[in-house]
Length: 264
Ligand SMILES: Nc1ncnc2c1ncn2[C@@H]1O[C@H](COP(=O)(O)OP(=O)(O)OP(=O)(O)O)[C@@H](O)[C@H]1O
Ligand SMILES: [Mg+2]
Image 1 (spheres, protein in one colour):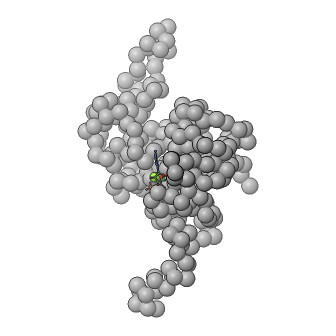
Image 2 (cartoon, protein in one colour):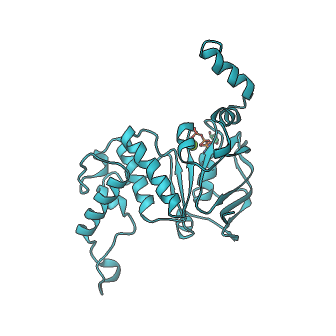
Image 3 (cartoon, rainbow, N blue to C red):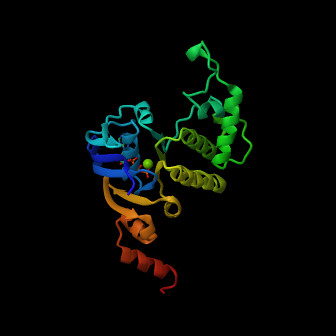
């Protein structure tokens, strides 16, 4: 069995009186796609934000490759090999697409100027175009154009491209296909498989069970701040997973499905 790359143990997080994460434990294995599922407000983004340094947990432990870590900032997470695309993406609207793709890590000329060295604009533009192609952005976008010119879906794709290129050990995608067109969605799903096949791990937060059954190896379901179920996708049905998400009975869901198809 593949080794655990990330392990979370007994995480708790309160927002005032709300117990947003209630004793959450899970593992992410090397080279797997783990889907993180649950209804609106279940705590998925809160969990992701705790792993990626946006929130500090009230208690609990996080281990990266069996070493206990403290993640105080997004930078800490990135240094540990955890890249996150948040649900509300944080691009810099006035900077160009290319600059956003490489924000904070622009390739520079080897130079005695050190940190003041100029960005290699030609390199960045070429790399940006290549990346956009990989996530299925087929529309011709000028890498030099500011991000504020883009649609919501296009912005999302840029943010995903940003995480992809650094080939982090774990890439966390919080509803990455929201607002995306068919082409871009397929690009993202293809990317997720590619990353997994290259031995990296992906945590995918989504409400789309079809996507889960297309790309995920395992799924865990959250409800009211707790993990309530886990599935091996190859051995599970969509109905079972759906029931875990809503808390409905599998038999009820099957009956409702049969009724919808004319009672057979
Ligand atoms: N910064 C915050 N301050 C206070 N409450 C918060 C904060 N962030 C989230 N919450 C609350 O915590 C709960 C879990 O929210 P979270 O965003 O983690 O849900 P989610 O599973 O990601 O839902 P969705 O599918 O709608 O994105 C919700 O009740 C939400 O209102
Ligand atoms: Mg969310």
